[in-house]
Amino acid sequence: MSAETQQRGKDPKDSIIRMDRLCNLSREKSYDHYELFDWPETVDEKSFLMSPQLLSVAETSFVDELTHEQMVKLSHYEQYNYSSLNTHGERELIIDVIDRMHTPKYEIFTEYMHHLVEEENAHLWFFAQFCKRYGVLYQPKKIVLPSSFPDDVNDFLVFARLMIFEEIVVYFNKVMSTDPCLPKIVRDINRTHFVDESRHIAFGRDIVGVLYHCINFSSHGDEKEMRLNISNYIKAYINGMLRLFYPLHAYTDAGIPDPYEFRSKLMKSPQRHGFHQKIVSKQVAFFLKRDILMEESLNTGETIGVL
Amino acid sequence: MQMQKISKLENWLTENTEFKSGSDENLDLIDSGILTSLQLMEFILFLEHLSGQAVDLDRSTMDKLRTINLISANYLQDADTKEVAL
Image (cartoon, rainbow over the protein chains, first blue to last red):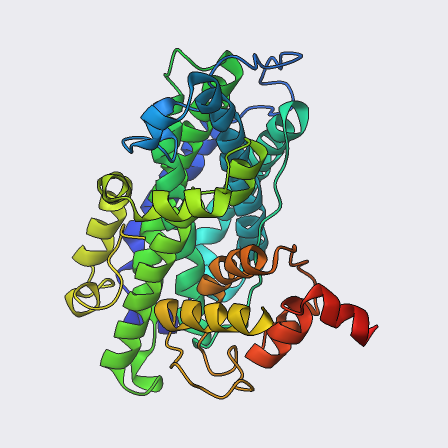
């Protein structure tokens, strides 16, 4: 971390201690991802591939409208969507992290970043393997526009996005890692991911706090307006992430009639809002505690978890 | 038919972005900040639903989505209009 960052940021000693501990944990837990899993030839088409309570139809009237066979089929394609999201999410993360390693601002984080990249590369590999062996690896519908935020805000947002994404998928990991109705390979993949991601989230929470503290607001015009813009972005990003769990392509592949309308109805379903708010509650509390999410932002425009 | 689709497109933009109904159809939706990175995925899904055709994502896609007129010309032309144009 540069002297300038140290002056404006928190005491870096805490981060140094935490990064050292995370590096040790990563070394202790290291594994060969190519040899870790026993990949079955096939997955049973008649069994759920994603936990029913995690499906996008859970707690809605569609559970009663769809047949058991349709639910099972939907669980397969929602699992491929979930695994594809992880694949592409990890890929984009690695690119952003490597882009910052061994630069002065990230000096105290770089050693752990090596572990992060190594572990995310493993995740990227096994999620993609799962999709390709048994189903489909979906490609993201995404166009990235140039950011209108200054560089130090973008640095913060890179890791804020990482944290938001990881905290959502970890909720899914935790449920699927112990669900006896899922194939062993699904439980094993999710357990492995869950254990690794708990360290990545600890890293994310540390670096996000530091980088927000490092933003030089006085050089970016109206400070309150910039803080509000960041808060609004975080809010929109969380909702954007939640929408990815309503995969139109998966509904189409699962044979759902009029998949666009189906998706629209599901996302607007009030029964789903509670679920959304439950899976993002920890990160919302984290951002609120640090005044990154501002009450002023929460009280206007879209509501977190209401899509 | 094409006019109906344009009207639906404008309604979507009005409901989901800062787009104001009756805005210039040559208004740059991206440079003006009306369509952001976070909204583009939803917008593309809606456009695919409206047009009945897949929106291929490549380097040129962004420029095809910049204005309502460009979106209309690239994705919302009626089949018979396309034949005449060809």
